[in-house]
Amino acid sequence: MDIQNMPWEEKYSMGTSPNTSENDLRQLAQDKDAHIRYNVARNSNTPLDILQDLTKDKIPGVRYNVARNPSTPFYILQDIIKDKIASVRGSVAENLNASSEMLVAILEYEKNVKEPEEDIIRFLYTHPNLPYMAKIIIETLFGEWL
Image (cartoon, rainbow, N blue to C red; front, top):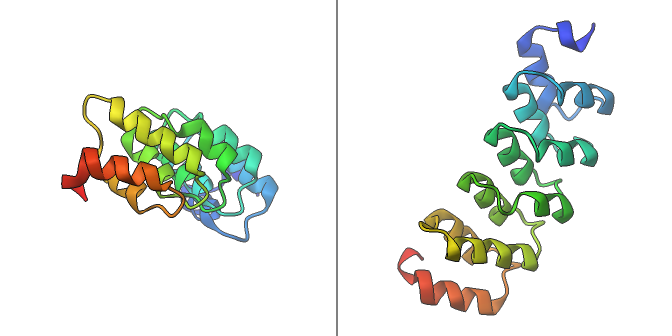
């Protein structure tokens, strides 16, 4: 059956299934329905070039799931560390593939915005890749949130 003509429920399930073929994930990543792309973004078997493309999706939930995906490597996470949507930045701050440099960049971003996000600061503080000096900065500037 042609994916474009499948019932929505089937496409939705295929997006998260570990058994969905690479070709089918590629087609689903192009679906006009954001919920379908949302599931493709969180599928640990989604090809890296598709995850890279989904970092540019106009729907924040899609970018959020790319950031949360444990299969997303640091070089793709790099594309969304300064996303204007806090939940996307927060998901990068939680992802264990985030490098120390990326975490410091997120901290710098949060330090310079009008209203830093408390959850992001907490995610950063507990991340195992956050450098010790960055932890000291967080304790100094945002200690009341810890």
